[in-house]
Each structure stands twice: as C-alpha cells, then as structure tokens.
Amino acid sequence: MNGRHFAAVFAALLLVAACWSQSVPAPAFNTASAGVRSADIDAAVALLCLPSDITRSKAGTASGCRVCPKGTDFQAVGHSDWGVYAETPGHFTSAQDDDLLLSGSGCDSHANDFGGSFMFSFKSGKPRLLKYDQGLITDRCRKFAFADGRDFLVCEGGWTGMGENDGLVLAITFDVAGKDSTTKLVTATDTTGMCGDDPGQVAQESDIKNIAFSTKDSGEITAMTVTATLGNVTCPVVKSERKTGKSAAAVKTYEIEFLFDGEHFKVAPGSRAALHRFETN
Image (cartoon, rainbow, N blue to C red; front, side):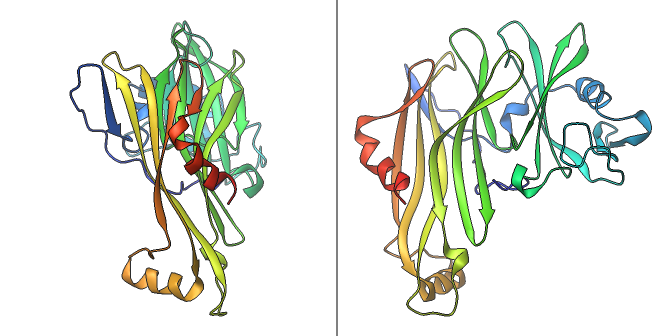
C-alpha cells in the first residue's frame, strides 16, 4: 500500500431517514477519529518519544517525533519526519477497554507502507502501549461495532509501485493484544502507470469510486456497497483520458454488495460475478 495516500477519498457522510435501514455514501476523511481527545494524543505520544523530541501542531497538540519511535524500521534515527496523521479512539481490543489507534508515517520503508499504527489502551486516563502494527494505515476509515461491543474498521487503502496502483477496501479487526487482522474485500488493480510509447500496448484501468453503507437505526451495519470501475484500454486512450478527464467506453462501472452477518462481510449472491471480475484481474 501507499502509506501516505490512499487511492480514493471517502465522500461526505449523508444522513438519510429510513424506517429499517439506510444507505449512505462513505464518510469524510477519517470519520472514525470523531471523539478523540487531544490530552489522550499527548499522553500516547509521550510514550513514543522524549518530551524534547515531540513535535506539535499549531494548536499545540502532539503531532509526531523528531526521533523515530521504537518498532519502526528506522527506530532511534534522529531528524526523522515521523508524524501522526490519523487518531482513532474506540473499543478495539474489548468492549470494556478504551483504546486509541495512532497512525503515523516517516519512519518505515516502502515495504512496510511507509508507516504503521500504534495501539494504546487507556485506564484511568493513562495510556499503555500494546502493539505497533507496521504497514497498518488507518486514515481513510469508518468505525463500526460487533454485536459484543468491540469496534472494527472498514478502510480504503492502496498500494503503488512499478506503475501499478492497487485500490483496496479492507475490514480490520484487533485481538486483545492490539494486533490487527486485515481482510481484503475488493482490490482494484490499475496498470495505466506502465504505459509507454507503444500505441498497441494495453493497460488495465480500475479504481474504487465509492463506498456506501446500509445501517439500522441503531447504527449497526447490515451491508456495504462498493462502486468500482474496470476495463482494458490502449495506452493512447489512456493519454486521451488524462487530457479530457473522461473514461473510455471500455471501462465499466460495477456495484459490489457485501452483507454483514454480525461478524463477517460476505458478498451478496447477486454481486459474486462482479467481484470475480476484480479477483481475476
């Protein structure tokens, strides 16, 4: 994955009235961060670096470290550019525990997505570092709860390398120790970055365009629909698209619905063929 930039951005969350359930576009930038407290961020970052090495935002909240934190690829390296770019509170390790997930970048290699996430557990306002998950990027996420009260995340991510760009939709859960378990639900692989001067060269164009959720009035998720594009185009057509901003007729739009049974996402029967197209390309 590209640790700093995800392939697409979640759209603004719209509230739609419904008697039983509602389908809404995906939320704005890291909606899962709602409710985070600056005091908790300060206390958590203080466990990662010395007071003299803490960097702060214009508002005064801790925003990173000048020395790479322990657990990162370049730990203890000074003059780093490690910074916090997503703060997500929740009950991830259990329904009773108050946790805080801090995603940061600048101290890990490309192989580890340039960053990762630190999981902290809070008791009586004091944080305890549980785990650093390298490569776990959580800056484009929506938070939901299991029936037992634990929280999990649905995130949009991506990976770029050698002219290939993969857009991803992920479900992320955590165990009692803070270790993540990631399930890839949809992968949109785009190879238009490999285009050269050969007019006959064919590339695959694909992208995640939108994610919409269906929820009960209680907020419990029941389903999710991913809108994604896929098609093969010649490289001259790719260049033309970049100029006009319009996709070629060969690039089709698909809606892939997943049903949530309280524990897992399962592709809806009517969406299996569409999902299979993305799994085989």
